[in-house]
Amino acid sequence: MSDVARDNAEVERLVKDFLAEHPVETTPDRELRAARYDAGLAFVHFDKGFGGLGLDSSVQPVVERLFLDAGCEDWMARNVIGLGMAAQTVHTHGDDEQRAKYLKPLFTGEEIWCQLFSEPGAGSDLAALGARAVQDGENYIVNGQKIWTSLAHVSRRGLLVARTDPNLPKHRGLSYFVLDMTAPGVEVRPLRQLTGQAEFNEVYLTDAVVPVADRLGAVGEGWRVAMTTLMNERVAIGRRGSRRGEGAIAAAVAEFRAAAADGRADASARDRLLRLWTRVEAARLTNLRAAAQRGTGVPGPEGSIAKLQMAELNKAIYELCVDLRADGMLIDSYEMSRPDRSSASGSVDPRRAFLRSLANSIEGGTSEVMRNILGERVLGLPGEPRVDRDVPWKDVPR
Image 1 (cartoon, rainbow, N blue to C red):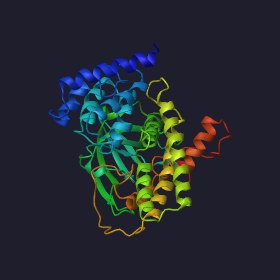
Image 2 (image 1 turned 60 degrees about the vertical axis):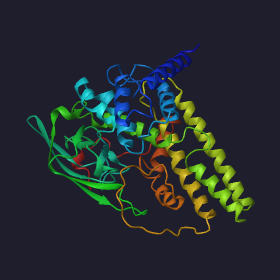
Image 3 (image 1 turned 30 degrees about the vertical axis):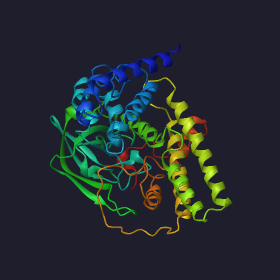
Image 4 (image 1 turned 90 degrees about the vertical axis):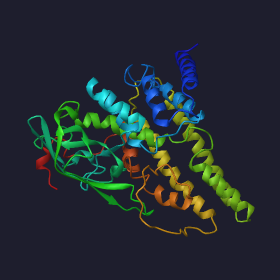
């Protein structure tokens, strides 16, 4: 038996025994998740004592599937930043005290997380960010503005990258922090989207205090820590839908069947659907194959493939859904709402999902950036000229 097969068999036994002791039907969700963390079945590739068993990262998708199949609640949409990005970042770069402080309430859902990276002048060129963190004794004083911050309005913690040394080139003058979103000087303002929802936010930091103890990694290592977050973000976004026929493509199939029953689906629509199904299935199998690669849980640039495919496919699939509907894009209301979970993976209403999908090729790294990463770091093509790479950040014209 291979190591992978042995680990899979072991976690299947552990999950079965755990669910026998904590029945899904009678155990409150948060209590079940807390017990799951204590049993090492939260992030099985993490160290023992921090929600894991020290197993390989390839086993984690198996554990997630077993719990979901048993009827456990899926928390990914409600805490996508925490589960998909913050957990691995804290485990990789945090000390034991930080791991103990953050990981369990993150997994149980007691604390929702957001990501304070992008700024009005630093999106695709994230390293150009200008939010300043100035050390004052045992604290940092942070001033600046962040934008496109998903779920900031319901978050307790935020992953914050800020500039600690403007005299260094842009990539080397950054540090990484965990921000208490309830601290004085942290102001969250809604950004209304095309769907009418305000899932995104602006966050204004005015003399916000961050303890030195809440810095992840050493001073000036913010870019290295941020890469762990970003690579996991792309995988988290790109790997939605691990079972055949689920997710966006399921909505397209339902719309096609409804249109066919009404005599509105022709051979051209069938051809579009089958081509999209084939692409989705190829992407799904590619993602599963990548997940099966044994490793530490810190993905490489190949995660950009999953993210790029998800973005482009989602837009094409929901465009087909809209084309198949008799009412097209007629929506009853665009009244603003502030959801408590991410809608990035789709909506029960394909019309709103179509509007939301337009952001997929921007969030988590634009499709253009993903293609650059794949060209340079996977295919080995020459990189684009970067004339400001070695210039002190403060000397770069803006």
